Length: 337
Image (cartoon, rainbow, N blue to C red; front, side, top):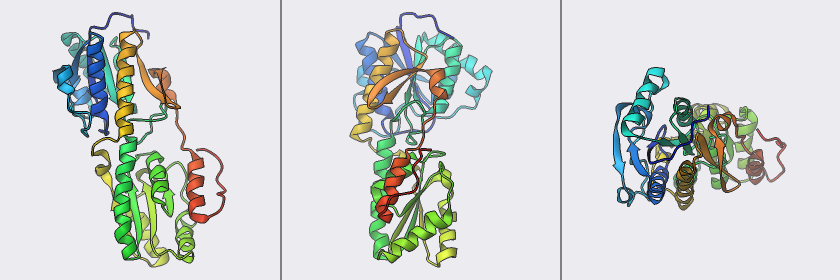
């Protein structure tokens, strides 16, 4: 449903779902761009639940002066079961009316945007900014937080490799990504993993793990690195299967939420700033109920309903590269997933 265009005088900004490095940079960009356009800005704390509970803080230019390099989100984040119900959404709309909000900028992933879609259908203009370390928002080539999470995982695995090589051991490292293998594959290439297991491709344990380790050992290697996306299976289970098949004792590491933390990289700060600026500019110019996304490095606007229908596939050319680096030959996998 198209919302009647009106002059935007005051907007809210919130972060929802899992936190991602660079969210603060996006909040900063939203606030400062709003100020530049003569628009008041209100920070909604704790995501959709905060909107229901009227948990807010007025934001001025100086309110966001020192948050650019900070990890996490100054507005906090939460998941809200109440907002999933019609009664909860009506409370959120009531808060928007009480605060005089002419629109909401939402920063998060698909779950956040589905909430934004429901709010827009109730007459509250929304613009979404993709931010998730999983990089699994279908409409956007890149999401805020992905680069920082990759760098964090690479640094951890590099340190782990140093000690594992000293003891000639097999390492199985589980990285985040939910049901998407973008993070695991990117990190696997960067650390020279023996193999990477991703949810987009059915795992052939004998071929993808056991034979890779055997090939690597015959080539003279004594340390083997297996990177597992959390959606592809349990690193603990993979380690047990390796032990049963080869008699070696793998060391299992689950990186977990350490990948969400830390100061955002330059790429995430720059991208978050561009997206935050573009979101407010679009709203100020009367374009909303959309998501600002990236395509080939450029910022584009996509209607939210259309954006939520879009899918992003794992780039199998990267998988082929990873295999070639390990096996020294051309992979037989040629299709994108």
